[in-house]
Amino acid sequence: MSWMQDELEADDMVALRPQNLFDLSGKVAIVTGAAGGLGSWISAGLAASGASVVMTDLSAGAIDRTASAIRKAGADILEVACDLTAENAPAGIVEAALARYGRVDVLVNNAGANRRERIFDVQEESWELIANLNLKIPFELSRKCAGEMAKGSGGSIIHVGSLNNAIGLQGVSVYGAHKAAMCQLAKSMSVEWASLGIRVNAICPGFMLTPLSEPLWQDPKRGPWLLERSLLKRPGYPREIVGICLLLASEAGSFMTGQTYYVDGGWLAGTPWDA
Ligand SMILES: NC(=O)c1ccc[n+]([C@@H]2O[C@H](COP(=O)([O-])OP(=O)(O)OC[C@H]3O[C@@H](n4cnc5c(N)ncnc54)[C@H](O)[C@@H]3O)[C@@H](O)[C@H]2O)c1
Image (tube, rainbow, N blue to C red; front, side):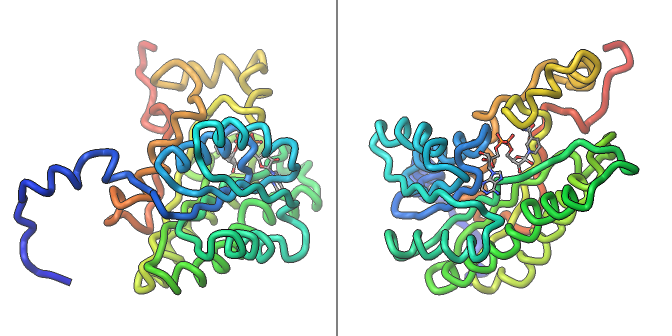
């Protein structure tokens, strides 16, 4: 560690070019839920910045559609089809990554599940599924990846939370509670793993347009309500989550850890009274 102030040199102008600051060449990233609305764009973004990407999701067919498009641009992709809730799935994903690349530098815990049930109607099975996919599995996979990152020069772990962790919404109590816990986990992990060179953050999308959220946007009551509250008067598009992921995964985010970042089109900021 140096206590000297950073003096700007001419060479820094090269290091500061976006293609260098956000460069992930030689890095290996694992993305869960990689065939989904956000996961496919996150995978593509990491690959476009030079990372080899381990794309994991339920079915090979679903991953392959996105992976083929990314490979056409010359990127290196490993597809791992597995159910994250299956026994030892996190270990299997990390083993597959190590067998092919020998290292893990970035993990994006993106896969998630939601069931829209009012509190009186919440089923035990819904609780289990939501808790597992949004909290327990990210916890396990992070531990496995952090162990490998610690053997190298560290890494970056990104949990995908939700704006729902900052605001109460009807019918999604269990989901919101576990997403909030996931963001809290980013803090605890950042505290325990900073000394290993591992940064851990959470990103919270607002209402994006993906297969998961499409029924909301189509709903005659909830669709207009969502638009009315949005400062930008439109849904977010999956490509709009890529920037924050690249920032947190790369050298550009080297001083960022233990935080939660909202990408929500201003949804949580408030609403003008004359909207
Ligand atoms: N879309 C939104 O508006 C929004 C808003 C806030 C947070 N999020 C969060 O962003 C993340 C991605 O959401 P999305 O909208 O892209 O969802 P999506 O449903 O489009 O994609 C989720 C992916 O996870 C995979 N998946 C689900 N269960 C799995 C399992 N057991 N094993 C392996 N893979 C499994 C699915 O096959 C799917 O491809 C989720 O964590 C979600 O909670 C989304």
